[in-house]
Length: 313
Length: 307
Image (tube, rainbow over all chains, first blue to last red; front, top):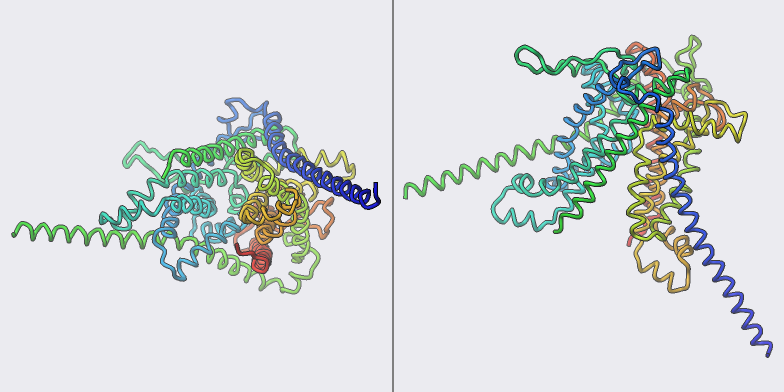
């Protein structure tokens, strides 16, 4: 064998070794990627299992029907879950109409001018504002300037502002996916812009609107910081006034102005206590909160998937 | 004849009504859009207004250079530095977790994972970002800190390390999903060019896709930073609430956000200096977020690749 051929063989061997090494890197990276991903998923699983395990002794009907108490065994979340439900009601009632309307404006109406640009930029920016800053806004504006106090309506409005960008972005995405041919067909029959929007674009975007609403509420339900900032109390041993009255006009909105507490604040209060017995209570509320957010997100994902699958343009 | 005129009139009236209704609806929709603008203006106005009274009592020089933050003590000091140090330290720890993990997941999902894996894993990962932060706080305090104490026996029960680690995990999905979108926007032909030269998927990802998506990756990291800076409940629960001028993550400390929570939990009278101090703290928080966003924006601009 000549010297040249030996050298060539050696080169090929070196080349092969290089290729093998690079292919090995490829495989190693796949392993690394899977490991990192599984770590994240494992954290989620551990979190949930840990909460359920620690909170297990508290999962009894009394937990939902008792007020907070100095005795950990007897302390429950009655005021907290009622408060959370009412605040969510106010939040949904404010954020959904305004968010959907803003999204419709941006997608269907907005002319190319500085006002539209300003709205667009602000929606993007607001999504990145830390939630506690919304709390400061609410404390300065709602609680003291508008004199709403530490009430359900102040908390609901705060969270509504907080989730507005989420609702707007989800709705816009849905509106954008409605093909233009649908709009043009309606215009061709003489419909006005609002008629096109109301009768054609909006019905097709229902999935996106629902997704945005659920995702927004799932964010709002776990928000603690802004509500602490407006000064919600953590020890409430009474319920807001009932919305239904015996005498005329049978419906009362007095509950909007009542003091309240919500589940995340109740959890924070229990976590910060040195007494170990309260950690069980905290874990139990945490498990409920986590289950609710995961469920809401699951529903949102399912709706998105279903609408994507069933609508074929 | 008469009848048809009246019919046309009727149609005209209907058209006029519909056009008027359109005009009204448009104004209402514009009003809804303007809510976003007013919210921003209101945030800035409230923060500046309440802070301005604060800065009438506290000279700006003390605020920026004093190394103690004790607004609620008899011997009051108003140096924001300890809070800023706490915020930056927890953010740094969080980024050390979230940036590598988020980027690896993004590269894996965009370049390696089969379609169905990507479609299944992405929504599950996003759940990690949807968990209420107070729950993460509990996790940091009762699981992560004890686990770390096994490794570091001298670690105090409240420390920035465990809070930062948990915040890092929390923002992984934000980083990974924005990064992945940026990588998927790198056109196919660039990858194919690289494969044709004999590069492996890993080489292509590292030398072609990542540089090509650099501006998007920068945006993802900035998004992660602003989440970490603004995170409140995890630090309030797990990092202890005592201002501490240190960059050592093993120590307890207080962040800007945790200070706001601490004050709000108490019963401070409206208009007192303690009440105003949380708005000054909030203003600093907004400025830090703004600085990172501007930096990210200019970075993104400079390295933007147009395809």
